[in-house]
Amino acid sequence: MVPNVSYLHERDHKRELRLESAKEGTQIAQSQYDDAKRNLEFTLRGAFVNALQAKAQLDLAKAELDYYDHIVQISRDRLNAGDIAQIDFDRIELQRVQYESALQSATVNLRTAKIQLLQLLNDRTPVEQFDLSGTFDFSAELKPLEELRQTALASRPDLQAAMQTIQQAETNHKLAEANGSTDPTFAGWYTYNASNNNPNGIQTVGASVSIPIRIFDRNQGEKLRTQIDIDRSRQSSDAAKAQVFSDVDSAYAQVNSNIELLKPYKEKYTAQATRVRDTITYSYQHGGASLMDFLNAQSDYRTVQQAYLQLIGAYLISAAQLNLAVGQEVIQ
Image 1 (cartoon, rainbow, N blue to C red):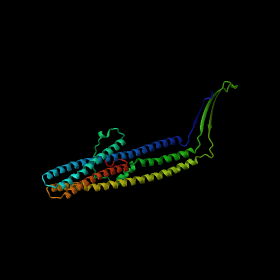
Image 2 (image 1 turned 180 degrees about the horizontal axis):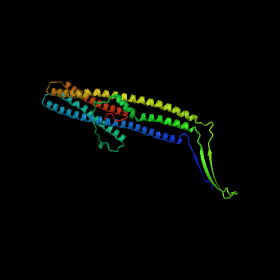
Image 3 (image 1 turned 135 degrees about the vertical axis):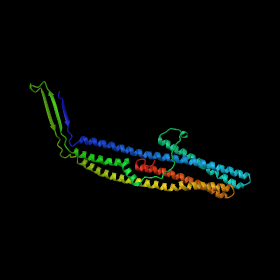
Image 4 (image 1 turned 180 degrees about the vertical axis):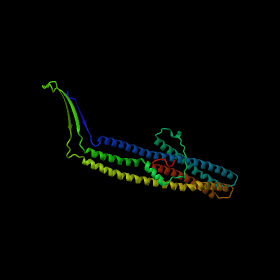
């Protein structure tokens, strides 16, 4: 029976450095997970905005068709009363097909947008039973660009991962330096030998210390590799920081541009288009405007309303892009 105990004494904090490197690797993985989540949320938000826009366009198409059906009915009454010619009524009625087509297209677009949203949500709800609601509008308030830049530097998980990679590379370099040192092994044993001729040597206790002699193994290659990793990680971090500024600046410019385009629509153009349409329609019904003026007013109204909805959709997408660039919700 020879029980023995040995202990490897690791010098220069090798165990602590391995633990620290593992913890930093876990932090990097968490930051990368947060970054993947950030990008997935942007994709989901874009699908939600597309569905909201399709729903708004469907509501507009229904309202326009109802309005135009009212005009057709009034024109039919005028035709029966001999107030307008048959050819004029036919031209008015033929225009209805555009509104029907717009309604069908809007219905299909909304259904397609719902299907895409359900797919991203991994939801098995039948599309006929699925509905969504949300604010389809814009806000003219926008935080200063410099404030958004600083928020992005503190919030972007991809930048945090790049910074954490530098810390891990520095820790790995320290570990490579420590691994170049020699670790002694301390051992002790106990021996019981009843067949020993020496009556005083039946039980013995011993101890030893072994130190490897490392002449050509100083871990030079790993030291150099980890030093290169530090430089590479720092360069990647600088590139990530530059990308953050580029993303924030581009998204900010797009949001600001959409706001500037939307302001006159909300303050003036949509109301003007409605007023012109109603005025020309009333005038045409009382003989004060030509049929061409009436049809042009209808077309202009549709163009303005569609452009307004498209701009709001573009604003919401660019706002989501700015939230993505900053790394947190800066525009609700």
